[in-house]
Image (tube, rainbow, N blue to C red; front, side):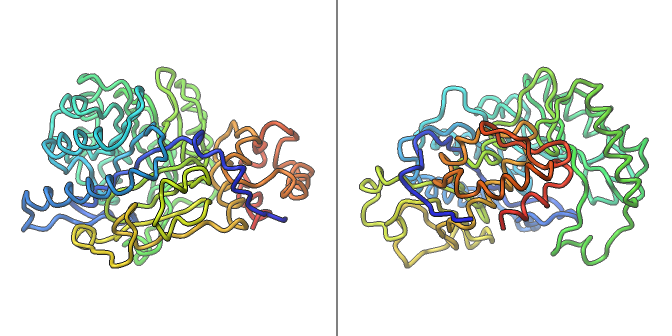
Length: 413
């Protein structure tokens, strides 16, 4: 596999550009969570929110040249628990962001929300600032399972939150559900799906609980259903979701008949670009040769290519961080690195193969700067094994390939 990056092949201006915003606080850290989230202390003050939004806006201004003239097509506000940030701060944040970036006319703006904290602002006020999609972290509607997961809401609050969001005018409401929970039975898992649908979910993210390092569950592992039970739950859940009218467009993402795939996440899975502001946020950006002159005097952007970057994880460091190395286009950097050509294939495949309909092969060259010929041998072998469809136009796993994605990915390591 000879993966020589040709930056002339990077069609940067045609690559969609998104923005990720990280709100790092939560009321209580869940035992399964490995995200960059920090419990709110008793000494919280409104000035902390002011300082954090100030830092977000500074960060956004310094990243503006990285847009290279592109519109922001989607925004995702994650956490933590983004609904903890007061609505007055969201008004200030989005008022300024609209002056910094060029928002697409049909921009999708998603906010993650916890049913236990949604009393912080009426749903209509989120709509007023431009947030037009909610992702509500329910995880389960079972009291015992919620307690085991460390969630701060109860089933009634979750149902009320979904219904209230729809009644307020949100036409797009995703509900996050986990399956394979400790001591979970198949009927319990199906009940969660049915309740989410009945409450008004237009999109369901249904994924299996995994035990991640650096979590409470990793240090004290709960007893999970056995492999046969997990397989039965997954198969029954897929059947139920299909019967309810949901389409499985990605490994764990299901869109209802009235909704559409999450544009922001699809951009990730299609190896698009995304800026990132906030503590611990990660971004990816493609730099074209034709725009380097606009980024002059920036030593980290001296060459065209595809870069990843990250920000200080601790909120206090993010707010007060001062970089002595000149990086005027992205302050508070703790990581800025070009993706090596031999890593681009595996990263591209890791993302796009999650999409059940796959992508056009032309996207591979446009998003990576590599050519189909550089991986033709590996592709032929995977086709012969029945893991990829035999097509010169479309990159897509077969049904068998969807079950053995890791085997496909190992071919490109």
